Image (cartoon, rainbow, N blue to C red; front, side, top):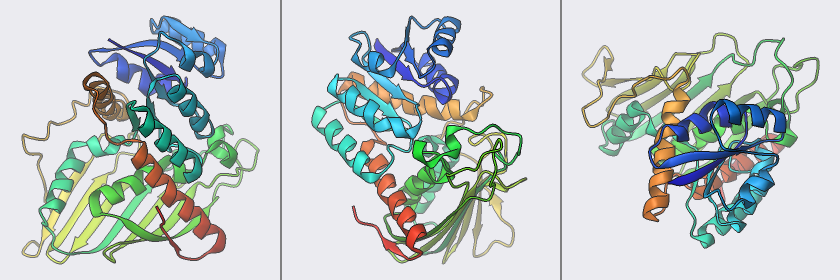
Length: 354
């Protein structure tokens, strides 16, 4: 039985905790956060034996085998480095760190330790995404000419919402880290290396809870892939009645559209459509039997996607084998996000250096 310690009582309690509790061979033994009283309440309510007063106590406990980090990004580096020092396997939320310098140290130390290390890029487990990946690998569209990706919601458009760490850049808030980290990771997974970027980071909602945010809520980014293909990427969480999450891929033989219009759930609701040269109307693609459909038993689809990642994590620990997405994928996304920030600052194209 792998004994899990959860760090974070927000997303950690909402997704990480029930995710691991749903897995055979894993036991959520402890939980910690910066709010001891809330931590204790959550532990009691969910039959978790140990409610740690600090994350430092959790990562140093001999009763914990692995750590699941769902704290704000500015804490990831300190927590992960301490966990590695104490011999704990680590599953870390994205973004991996605050910048590539931190992420590089984390990836290096994790690799040297021999411990299992993963970054929570869970979208690549969604069945329709796996189908699209296969179609692209089979060169279904021929040479790719253009890629457009939009992930636009109004989840934080309400002016009455409270001011949170997500609104402050010093804590790792902002839509680039929240949504953009996923998008960067899956762009390279689907289409190959990103060679250079041009980005504009904006704060469209200039007051939250009566305070001025310092973290961007909207990103407009152009990416050029190694093969020369351009990717237009737009993401925001303050645009009312946004389009949801969609990806349009245009090739010389046809096009694919991967889309989720469900603004209430980021995982449940994806569909994949295909247009080939001979088609006048797009064809909705059904999932072949080898792609088990998500059961959609949860009120939050992120939980079902996370369970897939957590299962990989536990299996890797038990078999003593590497797991993916690892800290290396987290580092790669961080390098590209650093380049996007640099591009925004100087308003110029920035080449990606590993």
